[in-house]
Length: 224
Ligand code: DX5
Ligand code: ZN
Image (cartoon, rainbow, N blue to C red):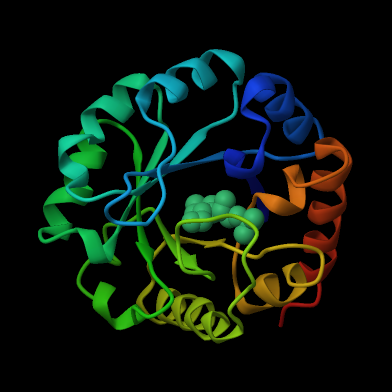
C-alpha cells in the first residue's frame, strides 16, 4: 500500500497544526518529523516538545526520523512524547540490533535509515527485525534538495531481498520526492513516500498532497 508521509521540515512552524491538518486532508497518512542535532547532520530542528504538541494536533501516526548522534539516549523521550514510528541511521548506531530492540520495547515501529553512500548490504543482519527501511535519496540535513537517482537501485534491492527472504519490512524514501520523481521511486519499490517541499513548499498543502498521492498511485499500477 502506498502512503504519503508529509515532512513538516518545510512547513510553517507558526501554523503547524493547520498545515498538518491540510496535508492529512489531502491524503497524508503519516506525519514525518525530522529530528536533527547539529552533529550527525549540519542542521538543528526540533525535539520531543514539538512531538508532544503534534500528538495532540493529529490522529495520524508520527514518524520520527532521528538524525542524531547517540539515539539510544533520546528514544524513550520521543516514544513518551507520542512517536509511533522511530527510525535511526545505520551510520549513527554502534549497536544497531540493540537500538532497534530499544525502539520496539517502547511499542514503536522500528526503522533504519541509509544515507545515500551507505549500501543496503550493511543491513543484512537486521532486515529480519526492522519494520521499515528508509532510503535517503538526498544527503540528510535540509529540505528541498535534488533527488539522487542512484538511490533507486537500493529501493529495488530492498524489494528483491524482501521477496527472496520472505521478510516483511516496508520501504520508505526521503528526499527530493515530488511530481517529477514520485513515479520512479514507486516503480523502484518505495511504499512510504516522504515529501516536505512538494507538500509545504508553496501553494496549498492539501492540494499538493493529493496531487502527489494521485501520481504515486497511478505509478504503482505500472509496477511489474
Ligand atoms: C532531509 C529530511 C527530509 C526532508 C525532505 O534531511 O530527512 O525528511 O524534509 O525534504 P524534501 O521532500 O523537501 O526533499
Ligand atoms: Zn526525514
